[in-house]
Image: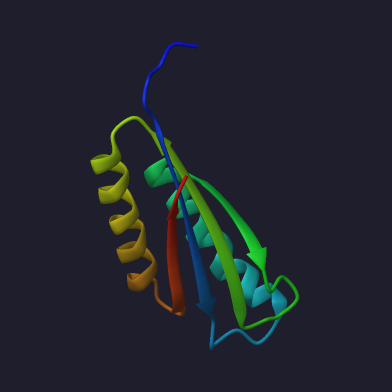
Length: 98
């Protein structure tokens, strides 16, 4: 492989789903958000925490690209998308570059 630069970023987002009354309610909300992120940003998304808690979730979102500015713009848009989601409250967002 030649020496091409690429960047990897990982967003971790902790979510509160205050209206969820069951794991089924929570999973419906989380699945919808995950699908929107995957489809719009071609990102890898996984639920990585609180799987058995019906009002909490933690998502890990991975993006890889050769343009760091584009990745920064995409992560900002992902954060906005999460903040605009109805029935979901953002508890915490962290970003790491690798």
